[in-house]
Image (cartoon, rainbow, N blue to C red; front, side, top):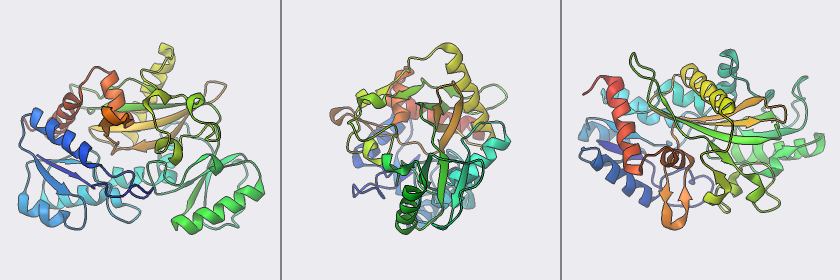
Length: 330
């Protein structure tokens, strides 16, 4: 069993979604706990040759890729070309989920509510009717809240144009402008697949408690909140929500999982407005898996898995078993 990821060697916003060495070591222990021999493959330009040479029985893929708007599809493409089974979403799903506007269009078509939006390719693009202000601006092809903080929420035309100019210059890609939903934010996770005799397990819901973040970060889980001010005490898991809301989140997550053809595991982000309306925010078919108790450094997916009664090792074991079952390998 090979673990393929990108090793975090720098702490800037362009590398924060890569895996630090202590996470890689925890995954190694989890793979061995599941009864498999462990290999490591760096998810960079050398990955194809490593996969071809080592020929692992399966790849646990957590690689974010190195460049390009579909970079998260690179390892799935290598594995499929070489005929190597792998854990997680395929080429098309990983490409779509890294494209925020495309993800929203597919989910809207499949009955999953998202906020009104448009895509800006120029600072002068007019605001489309029906989108309206306030907007939150996001790079279209990035993850881990890259490029997003409270000042991405714009309430009128002047800051909209200024922020657009800044983001177009910095990220060199289209910018998603999404109606800002002021309300509660939830994260959901699934583990498993829709197979004839099973369905994905819905993990404990996590809620972000914005009231516990320092003043000035606002009601947005942005890059600063996720890195500089990240503490487990800022998150409530299991979320203190009524059963009907939990069920609505579960059903919406299952619908999104099917519509995007995701495999084995995923993390979804949602907003709920003052009227109780749920809006999809983002899908992550390669969820972060940091869990360092000594440094209080937890990604949301293992936080939800632990709250669901799993150990970290058991989470990795069940993830591997989900992929084996999907491939019909026993």
